[in-house]
Image (tube, rainbow, N blue to C red; front, side, top):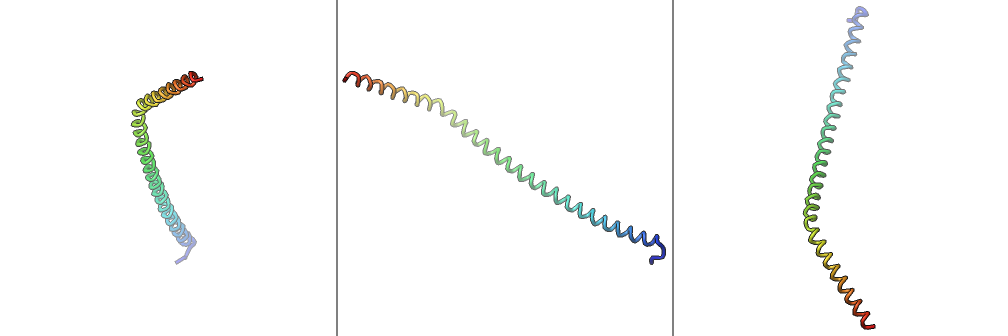
Length: 99
């Protein structure tokens, strides 16, 4: 089988090619698994971003609805404060008359 040194060279070369092929196979497998994990992580991040977007849009809608109620509410509170101030002024004037 091994008559010359050239035969030994071919056997060594065959083993080297075998190991290079095995290493390349493992490298392809692990790179595919890494890419799969990156894809899964990006999918989860995309879902989280969509969820945050939904929450923000819901919050924005609620704020806009609440903002439409604010001017009448502010007017009502202003009128209440004015009424209390007038009542307090009237009571203060009554108190000064009694003295």
